[in-house]
Image (cartoon, rainbow, N blue to C red; front, side):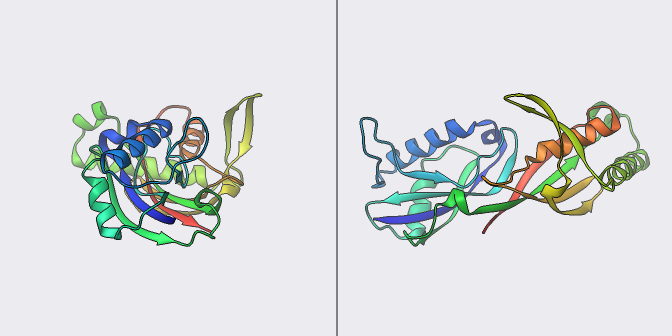
Amino acid sequence: MYRIRLQYTKCKEATWISHLDLMKVFERALKRADINVKHSEGFNPRPEIVFAHPLSVGIESNCELCEILLNEFYEEAVIVKMLNSTLPSGIAVLSAKYVDLKVKSLMSQVFCANYEITFEIPEKVRENATPREIVKLNTEIKTNFDKFYNQEKILVTKKGKKGDSIIDIKPLILKKEHIADSKYEFKVRTGSEKNLKPELIVKAFEEYIGGEIPYTIKRTKITLA
């Protein structure tokens, strides 16, 4: 038996595929590619696939990870080619490498993740704005966000099974870096022990400014412990 780790993209229309449907996408792709995958035992055997950390619907990524157990050895480049011939648009395997079967599960190794969050000027405003006005608007977004982030605590309302609660998410943010205009990169705790969804950073900012703001999010790195 062999354990292979894949890095793949999830972008464009594929960002709207739910995690549950993504699992089905990979199961179908493996079957169409005729890859000899190990299946679970029982009445409803399923391919042995483990994903690093579910990605929220609507978020793009070029660094997703999953591991598959194989009954047969394939060259890494061959696996990449076989899967890319059967995966849908927006999902593409970038690389593959074999890992030791004794290493703990991929999901349990996830420690943190990096995200790019871009706050955008509303389309209707952008259409009628001059280049100078766009620069000014981006500067205003950055100024407001920096004031928001420099608070001692970043409080946000989080919905849960037992109702809403107010939490401080700042301890879960390991690093913040301004990239350009109103684009930032965040490194946040991710995984089964401590986890911060990047959407909560946006939600907290919206609560701070008292209104909604268009944005996009892209996951750029998953760090394993």
